[in-house]
Image: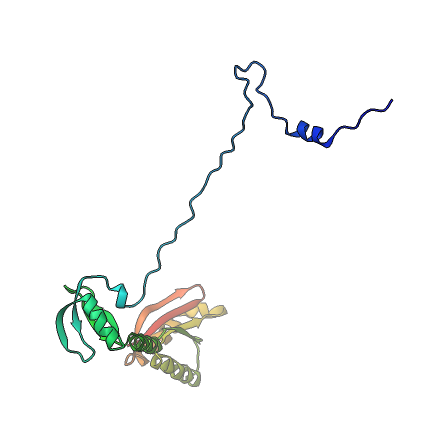
Length: 216
């Protein structure tokens, strides 16, 4: 006996046939499944803070106290008129005193102003000195020649604006003669009193005695 082949539409119908309500339900409608999706709002970052003074169309107040390109005070002028004067001069309207009432604005070249400010900031960074703490190591029984060499190095550090930590290390039986180390540090203190001051008094830590000096 030959059985007839099922049509493709029959198999599709079997797959897509809707699911009926469960037995005992009062409703005979087709069960519908709803999918709920939680939508998260994208994280909103803070608006970037503008560096430098406001200029041109960023100035939205109705009136300003205007100074022209020659430095002449023109008094209180409508902002639109001040912008027009700056455009006609081929320059910018820049707010130079925002806390005044009304704010003071000047007609000038904004590009040159930014360049001058950047140059000034770069020069200020060059003048900044990072204070370092240099270490000078000595022995309680240091001889005169080595002491003079250490003191010359210490003098250079003070001239450069750095601090100096003088460290004495005791070995073996030298710990029984700590007074020698204290005497040596007091001598260093006396020899540098003209151009240095004691920032940390001599103290013993383990087998080391230390003192910190800073330039005056």
